[in-house]
Amino acid sequence: MLDETMIHGVVHGFYDEIRRDELLGPIFHQKIQPDEWPRHLAKMCDFWSATLLRTTRYEGRPLPPHLAIAGLGEVHFRRWLKLFRATVRRICPPEVAALFMDRALRIAHSFRLAVAFNRGETTIGIEPIAENEL
Image 1 (cartoon, rainbow, N blue to C red):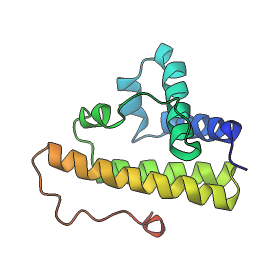
Image 2: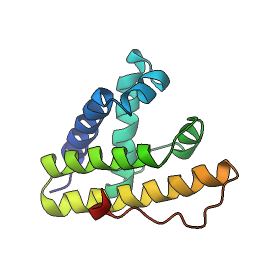
Image 3: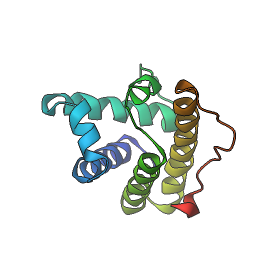
Image 4: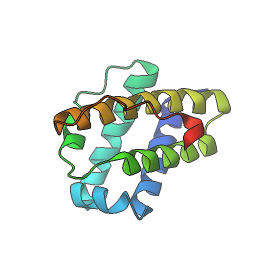
């Protein structure tokens, strides 16, 4: 059953993996100072609560911080999705993991399009990443 406790477990488990990851960890360590992590994790819990449970706690715009990351590209999105998939599969029942992944894949696609557009690159040919391609 998807609830706030499960969302908390996914968010905290996922960012534990992110912080240890050789590709993504340095990006997060550069952007989020050690004393800012509790606030960031709380914000991410609010984001996923709003996204999946339709709560109204999240107030923010998730895209702008990502647009500010120089060099953010396909390899980063694919790693993010792989780590996220491993986390939700470890923590959630299959149907809830599928719900998380459906949203994560959609978010990744919209962010990839926005990053390319923001850089003045063509978005033609940017196809959604399918879970079975990870």
